Image (cartoon, rainbow, N blue to C red; front, top):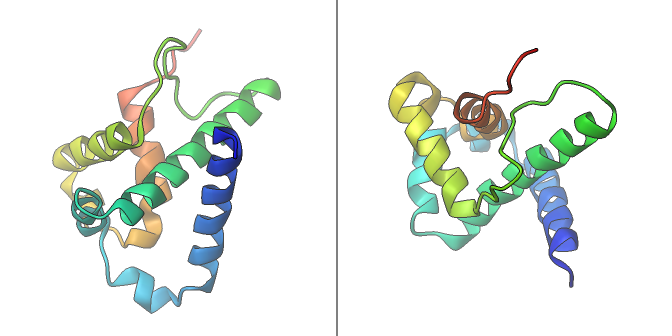
Length: 123
């Protein structure tokens, strides 16, 4: 299976998982605890990477549509899943209140982390 197809499937799996999990079950785990678990749990790390790859896909869509990007990674840089976990971990160290968000808000914390780490230049 090609790598892009794997990422599409992981993103879809994350979306389906989020949709079927009861809100109360999702909200028991914080983003900070989810990140800690990702350090030792490959499945949790894959969920974070899948969410990040979804954001990359959204950025590609926005770029093709001629719209402003969510964040701007240098073209020469490819971010690994472990690096996304570290980017979010570093962001939460600077903004601890985001670590207390429910894990269901991971996407918001991911995009905030990426936007802060890789801001787009304004013209």
